[in-house]
Amino acid sequence: HVANTHNIQISSATIGTGDDCISITSGSQKVHATDITCGPGHGISIGSLGSGNSEAHVSDINVYGAKFYGTTNGLRIKTWQG
Image 1 (cartoon, rainbow, N blue to C red):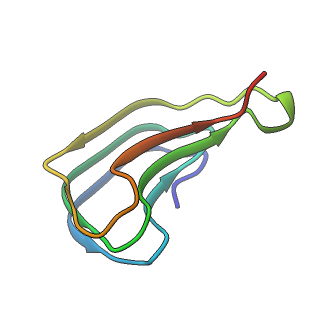
Image 2: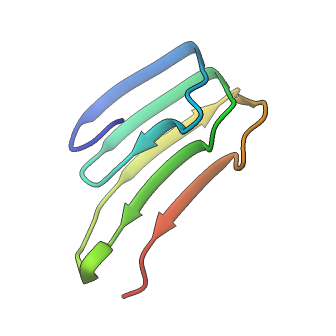
């Protein structure tokens, strides 16, 4: 779970939690995931952003060479209306 941080490198990892392999929330910047094997679980999630009509900022997120096995999603962005 990556929150309120910057300059994070996640590489050459196998992650199988049954939930989000990587979750990225508000305040995260410059997160780079390379050569990730993800599953089973929900995939890689950015959010939930903007809950309760709030502002949430995430920027410069890069995913390269990810493999997903038995996941409900690949990479998803979860936002709230408003």
